[in-house]
Length: 434
Image 1: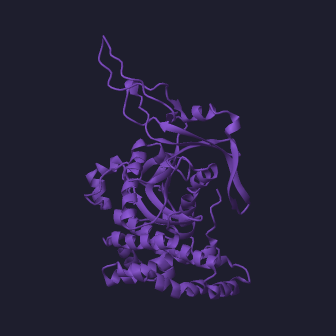
Image 2: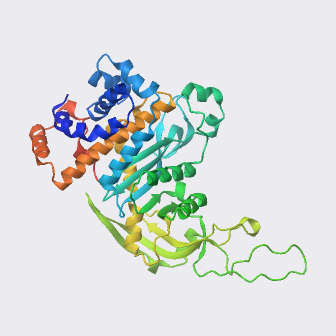
Image 3: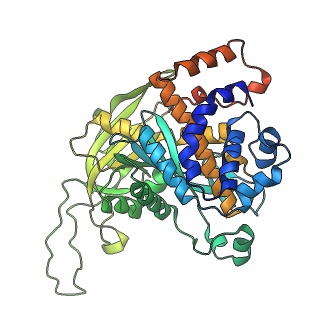
């Protein structure tokens, strides 16, 4: 056991107690801390065999059985994680961030793998896609849910499902529907947050936005530039009597819809204002923003495939320093200021930072098993390890563990050795930079 991990040991054991109580069997309660120690300790690979060599020599099969073969349910443990996360970073000023992250794979047998868009690579690739939920406040993210997206090709293939032990109850569902289900689960687990955030992969979906509205949630989401909107003061014409043809079913708007890009451009250059939403490690983070109230064209269908005016919301344009322009919608109050809108939108990047750190520091993408249960067990244990590190980080930020900081400085005063390069430190989790 490394000197640094010994410094964490008592905190770790105490923090882990409610998770172990959620596991039904003594063998699970024995191997869970071992696996978590393997994730937290140094090592380039965080797959089962390399971790077993470091933390449980000779017990590779036992560790494999615990993660990949055993069918222990994740829900009770996820409930503990949700409570821990909410206590750590939850509150009315917290954000619940919907996103997905890809795990790149070479073969075709890992559960749910197919050629699909991979955000990490920015292109189509052979990968698994996990729908994620992250709770974040003050730039400190804590992921609370990672669920595998099961493509249609997998859902309908009985042989592949059987080989990967996909439960019969699991069907193909679009990512936006999975995300809403996880939002419901978070609320059922009493996770406290103020606003839901999502990128254009979810925000461009009218069903997803409507689902958030039905749940009476505040949200701010990315959209594509071609998303259709109406002016906020749009009205509907009275129904006119027709002497020929079929009678009209819908009242026509007094003006046509426009794309988000066209609407923002029509405002002119004077509406753009520079906004600094926070200070980063390299200085203030800023961009230019333009905001206008609109009604989204996502109401009932009208003629020629167009949509009636829907909810009145904010349309926000962001012009980045590199010249790229991004677009967003938000149902925050009509009185919300430009800085409030900008800082809310930019808070979404915390989840991407968390995904990157879980892969680089804790081996989220190192799992080499092929089963449904194994992947979800590994992902859940990675989130638990990450939440523990964030707990240390918050405590360190508050200055409540002076002895820990003093001991840490003693062990690092002589510089980092080659064996220390891949060690996970609570202070190695940087604040969001984007």
